[in-house]
Length: 278
Length: 299
View 1 (tube, one colour):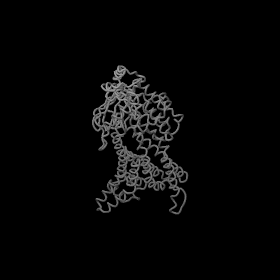
View 2 (cartoon, one colour):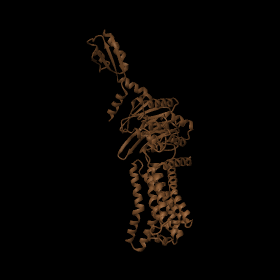
View 3 (cartoon, helix red, strand yellow):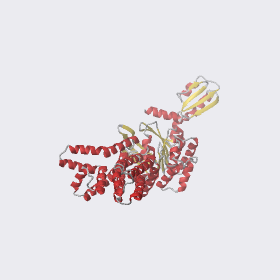
View 4 (cartoon, helix red, strand yellow):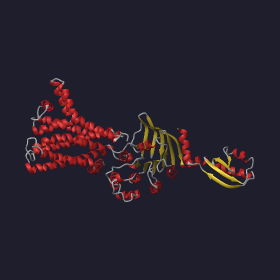
């Protein structure tokens, strides 16, 4: 019964997300930017033409880290903080509230992954036709990281929407934007600022914790480690690598961090929803 | 079917419902009346499992289970006060979603869509629906499962006369097959027409719980008898006041407020006095007046 409810709610949410203007804009924007990144990679070095998969992957990483959490948080929070009348009708049905939430999350995840697939697919096809398949694994790693970041951001959106149950949707959206700004923009600045005030040992430990605590940072480190090795690392990533003793263990910890952030906030949101007054 | 036992709900410092004990038995139609903010919606939402009691218990079904248990809600259907559905879905898609969620057959879905009489708008996006159409769609969804308990929060608030007529028809049919209905309304006509019992809440407290018969008696005791007589015998009013102390002469009529049971005795007194009754009007008390008495007296 629960699986059927999850599937039914997922199908409905997928339909709604596909029809939503925000998802359509995200799909178009992501496709345009992905194509733009692939087509303009040589501009800074004075050249022109489509760059290969490896170079596009490196350029796409920052785009993914910036835009995917923002869109997933906004789309997720909007969809999950339902109108009161709609929520009352839905949650008075004889099904567990958490089953409805999981269904909605699955549907949103599928819609956002489909939107990103358009961008990755379009740029991937053009790169393949112009530059061949060299470096395609790096490109696929970025796509995988983008999917993981979508899951993490939707999980956070569920928690934000759950915390704002019974309040106005704008409040939840404000929470989503604040979360994005903190995780993507502010967090690094603060972590590096505080670390610069400490001695080497405590600073390293702080940076390791900071990297693993913020899924966006963890994902950035993981992707760069996977596609570029240690050549493009910053201080936080190097501290993590020294702590874990090698790239394999570092990637394992980063994967664990991503899984944690994709599941735990959603579980907390489900628990909150099960107990909330609607 | 529904049992509130010392049910209290507080939202921060505000007590929405205070120590409510009320049972709605199988097959009954109970109207929950009260002014705005009296706790009607909170009471109904507690029965629908949407809010949990601060103290006390709310149980539904047979055998009784806590209303917050999803299994208990298998036998109920709820229509919220402000119905809303995702604007990007059509009316037909909304009904189809709830049909599948409740495991209802397609024929029932078609029947409720017909009942909703959306005038060919069921394939249109819900975002284009008027308030009345949304209410009709909400009713269609609420009536979709053959649930033994129907909870309706101001079901007629946005309905036009046709919708109202269709709604009364459906509720009377559901009542006839023994469905339990617990509803709130500000339309006293709805309550008078449909309910077997009336519960009146004021400031979260139950101030009156009456059967339709008890209500009829109360209203009758608040009635007025107007007698037009051919002449005014000097001692008639004094003799009538021994039975009905508030009796008075008004514009050539003997106006006798009071219980309907006293009326034959008053007419006998008129005849004994030598006067003839040339016209007679008997009115029962009105529900809205009685309701205002209760609400005003309690607040």
